Image (cartoon, rainbow, N blue to C red; front, side, top):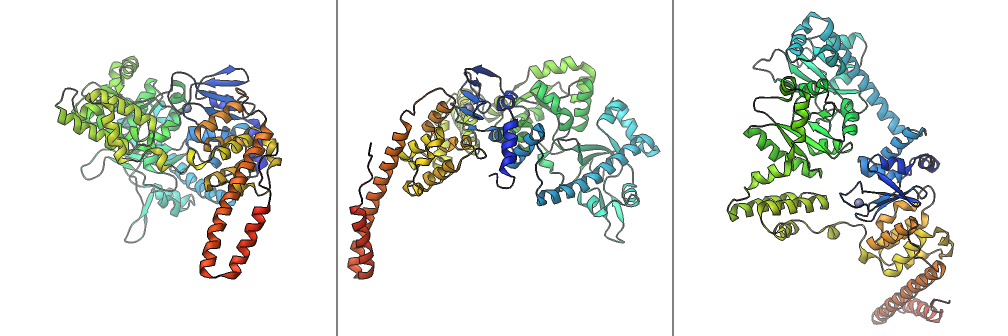
Length: 581
Ligand SMILES: [Zn+2]
């Protein structure tokens, strides 16, 4: 997992990081003895079952069994890969990581493209504020009541009828790069470069660090033959379905308020920010995607979507639920009075009215369920609704979310929960049949106990015979054993506890957290378990030999028969390795 970055660097980052401090960013922790406890940040609960041991660098949830070290926590919470989590934490604590050559190349490519977008953003800004051609766009901003300071804050610009391609060329910028990110194109005849964005008010789209990766452009004045909005095409810098507008500016406010408000348009985001509501973002031209929701989920679980109060708005709210459900989020819907956009509403009614409207938001799931069938609809209609819910559930990953949805749907449709659940099962195998990870049945009780003992008392590893792995019967148990045996400071065992059968993981976590001393006489227990496994392995081998000897006899394979008989004799003569204590 860590292979590419030197282990000492990983250790250094871990040592300098406070797990309690990191976890506290997501859930309130209370000190209890040597550990900290709080509500689990991975599943919803009312009484705390989440424990953190700063000493051990371990977190563990006795409810959902989420567990691991600080890297695992950041990976789970922020949807990051291990290298990304490492990089994030290293940045926070000031540990410099060596760069991998491939990274460096990719980064250089990205830097080069970002220089082109930054150049274009400046060019558009100058055209907006300093050229005669920008007058149309300036007037439009006045008409939408966007102040110059606000517009400058969002680095808005104007794409004139032409000039960017020329300016890029004059500045010696790589035109191929500008083409790759969709700023310019080459005309089929003659081969000259032309600007892709023309006559447009330009909204820079940034990454989380605030670097411009793409643009959205609104045609000014609108004409019949051209699209009102044009977005940069997907590029190495930008994926439309995975970015949202305004996030870099909104992220602090989202974090502070622990809520994100979703609106439809760029101008809505800007107008609400101007009015004092900073935690607002918009999807990019298309309807919201599950990837966009997952991106925002890094910052909050509280989503409110602003819809129009008309029929179309209600339908959109019902449809929107499925996207949020895919990302495991119960979003809420707030409805604007008819005829209003977010920006016209906040200009007319003020920020407080908007805040009240957001407070009155209602669960999206209710709109979704009502769209399937009214609560008092005939049974057949409600049953069809239940079928729809079951179909949706079959596509969802989060069992807790599914459980809550099923309960809510059963209530609304006035049908027994079982009816929805049964349907769900027929579509989708229960999780323990599809996940390859920890099955209790893949581990014998002695195997499990050995793994537990080695995790809780790693100093016992020296008692293991060199070829101990061959004592583990299933490949799963053997693989986990090898990882447990290899665990050390740079590959801490806290990563592995989640792979144990559930009860065993909880026992290990309790022992690590110092809550229970259940591994008394650990040395002897370990030896006994090893002896038991060895005995079993020996019996299994004897049984197999008997079979093989019979086969060799019937084949008349005397050479093979000799080898097998010798082995059987050796095995039978060897003292059965039962416990000696
Ligand atoms: Zn949990």
